[in-house]
Image 1 (cartoon, rainbow, N blue to C red):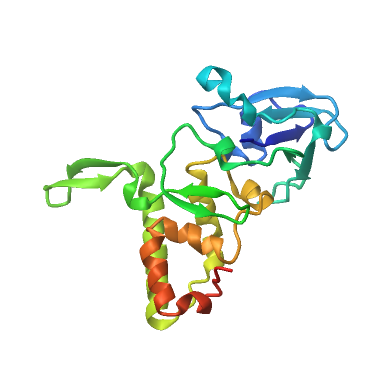
Image 2 (image 1 turned 120 degrees about the horizontal axis):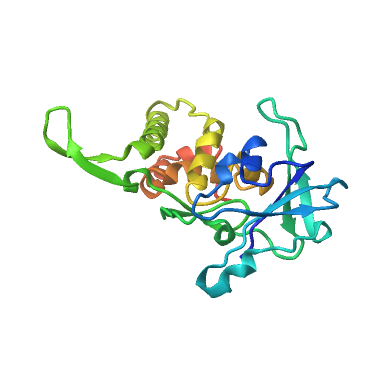
Length: 242
């Protein structure tokens, strides 16, 4: 298993705040902080700061996820411009000999879920919305009730909204515009892995078939996609299995 590297040109603050400042706050794992070191000659030829994740759990058995820290041993891609932030504000690097794998990107707080093979050929676990943590309390009528915890309400609601879109299409062929689900699909992957939209794009994780698969996994895709197949709607959505 192998992780990725993040290079930030210049002299940023030597903490994970530097990741937030360039738009990579989503990849921070409070239970698995990134390490950093100076890089005198980065992929852009200048000086900067290199962030990496060094797994020292299990007596150091997990150190294999650490790629070489030398810039020349890795393939690099500069960040794309986004939301007013300039291109090249950070660079993403991956080993030339050890591909980035889901196991190398696991968060310490892992929710599990349904396995989906994405476009990189690896199997990724996509959380199922209804299986996320719940608490017991009382409902609006004062009755004991099991309710999804507040931290997961937005994700749960988005999952249900996408389920409704798929159902609506099955009824009246109203195009759900699956491409609109990019952000939600990335959010689903990011719950279990140190991934954001920049990294999902860089690793080329999702395509015509795997993007809707990732979305549908959040509401247990096996049932929904099987129904779409039976009604011949997969092809109508532009979704093919090969």
